[in-house]
Image (tube, rainbow, N blue to C red; front, side):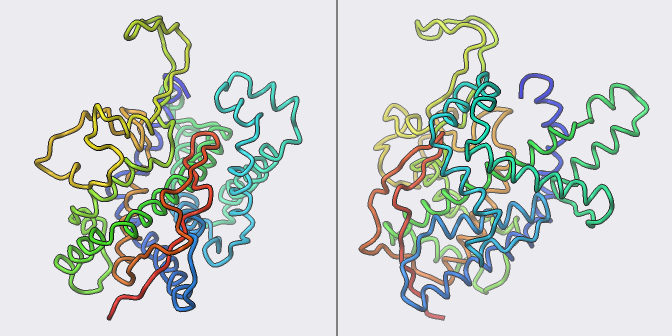
Length: 384
């Protein structure tokens, strides 16, 4: 989206991610995280090696579908859940040549679709969009109860725009159906992979650095000695957990091309001429590992984010993008990550094993940092 069109959509969506809305979502997030921990418990009892990235995908989809669309899908307990399988197909096929061309050269997308109607990437995408259309239709007909989620917010805006008397209000509020569906689809895709990758890589780093696990567990015991459910306000008090997550996202950013912009006028930057209309993408992985901004950039060092430490330039850290176009769902993602890690750390020690690949071999379809061989770890129950 560009210019005024992007501003309109962002204005409509912003209220769904307010602090108040995040508080309302905590109950759902905690319930999803409980299922995740139960699954880990069952596997740990059998002494199984867990592929954390795959298990985390089920959790992330569970949170997204319930918080954004109020879908009741059994994607954690059922690895063959149809929606999860279709989404995995999208990313599995995203590395084909045509999909990559569509991503890097958006202007060619329509031509590619005409020439390759049968590409699995496109077919899978259409299946999910058809599912979204069906949910929207059910809500409009009153056959599905209204839920205060992202989808309902956009439907309400459509209704408000239709009833608005002022032409300007109508224009500013109206989200056409194709835009509504596109935002739901992008939110599902964006939240599924980025959050599951962030969780898997953080668990890997904690397994590799058991002393950091101990510090996080001690912080939990000191601040919340019971086993009570934590609110979003409680999670914000866990300062050590916050800097560990930030360092994990620096070392292993889930996407390497989050920051993309289109040049609006001819400009020369550091001797390089960039003509108007050129798409410019910031290589986030390289930015996060640049020794000019980060001392010992390949070292896991949460202290670099602690208060009082020498600060890095704000623009050198971009796991969720930068500026007004930064990821709108970043707060929801951080709540999910923190709530899940709290529950995992309270119950388990996270361990490396013979099947753990260190460092993980990464492949990058489109812009995602996918672990080629997964993130394989073992869990050991903590003493009650």
